Amino acid sequence: MHSRKWIVPSLIAPFLLLSVMWIAQAADKPADTLILKGNPMGAVKFEHKLHTERVGGKCDTCHHASKPEKPATAAQQACRDCHTKPPSAGMKTATQAAFHNPMAKAGTCIDCHLKSNAAGKAAPVTCGKCHSKANG
Image (tube, rainbow, N blue to C red; front, side, top):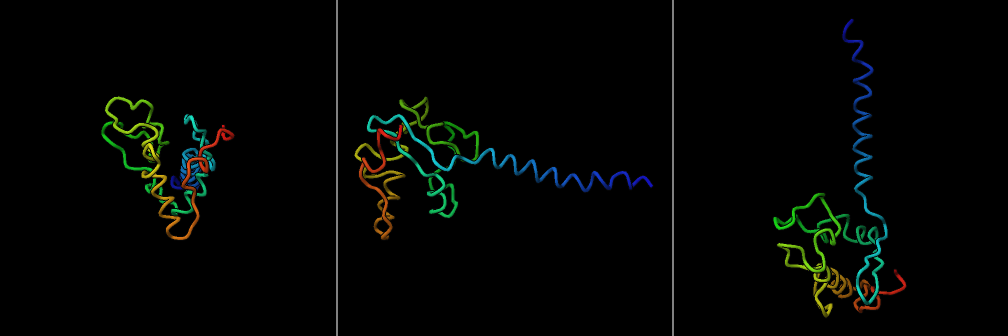
């Protein structure tokens, strides 16, 4: 007789757990399009969803593991959470260097764009193709 009172809660508990997990996952999901501001050449309209699809959903393609100098507060964080201008204490890489070097000849974004172009998939490699004052 006593076991009957646990039937309903035991049926509801998995549903509640899945609901909480779904809500937590949705809260961590970045916007499909981000505007990366702060560059004097203009902001970059970054199609996060498009880039995520192109790398097969592998977040660590762009987001590196947490560093002891600035431990992560989430699995994947915005680059500017840690890479600031000027670099915060203990950090060596400022905002721009998190994306590419001063002449945009190497770095996370430009390396991938050059690799895509070499594979026959068009990706922008000139400043004005990404940076635009019209983006904000």
